[in-house]
Length: 234
Image (tube, rainbow, N blue to C red; front, side):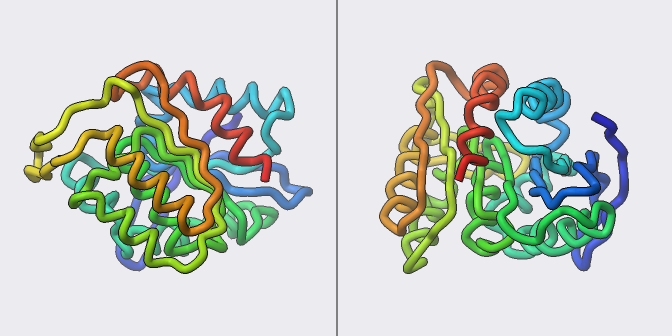
């Protein structure tokens, strides 16, 4: 895969993005990875994506890896932030379609882990035509006393597809996370369960994957080869 590093400027944000263009002759989806630096450097996503495409387990597509821009920005951008959701769903997608005109404008995929897993699910709520599928690996749905569940239940109908995973050892609660002092009152397990229940109640298709392990890159890497084909199979 040929990866290029480019600057994407939007109305409210500017990010340096790693971009991989898909086929130029065939309409195809865009797959956006939030926390892109983690997916590239710690998860090791590129070899997995190459193998999935080579084996035809997922279709050919374009990929955009969007970095978090640091711990402070993660606590601002990834907590159901409508402005950041617009940057990804409008500015970034528009930029990508200008770069690769065969990227389709609808039914794309957004992926994230931990706090960015919360953000990926949120983007399918606020921009359902742009992103119809979301991967949320150990998503931080405990945020603000499980507020995401309330947001999801407020939608009369959700038709998106979600892979929500969590480790059976993600049992920390009553914790404070630097640098902002973000308070976690519930376990990751409980938070993810609340999101699963709320999304299903509103009509979404959900795969709830509980893996053996903790909040770590190794189990996220291990499930990627199963999660992406399932999300792309709709």
